[in-house]
Image: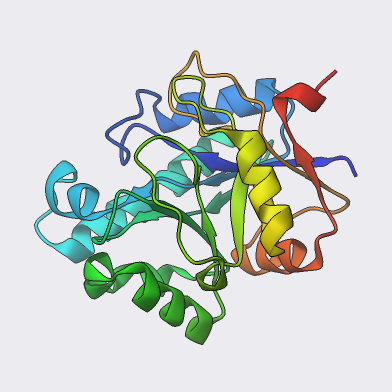
Length: 225
């Protein structure tokens, strides 16, 4: 397994918490030896209604989607870039990584008002995988594992204690699929998460199929040489 894919990264033009322009994101991941990246910017009421300054919700979703294009263009073929999504819904402070969606999914403004039960039901209906991001970080709320397809068992954000070992044990206890991500935000952020797979991935469908197959290895800081 030699294809290295980041599953959790943010960029400046869409995620208010990131200070890294899309062009720099591309170069940093190329320099770090990655083959691909899922740009999972924050999809939230704050992002779509306040941080982005377009004339409409649809215009702001266009900007959200455009960030991945900017990274892709800056990479100039040296890095595969997939549009991702870290969604923050109304019922708690939790964040969820979605895999297997298409762009049209992001234009449904009503989703932002959903609770986790309703979001989970929608994802099941549309064949989208839902993984809770950093589920044991301070401020997060544990949810019914039956509402999830997986959880992020390694989150590399060094400014937070995500209690990754607890998340890993929780996934084992409830038979949840596992993901890993650097949770990249800033130029000085450590890039040390993602998955290793045996073939190239360029679409959300391909990513979903790999996660369902479990034929991948997690990239984690403490496993790096």
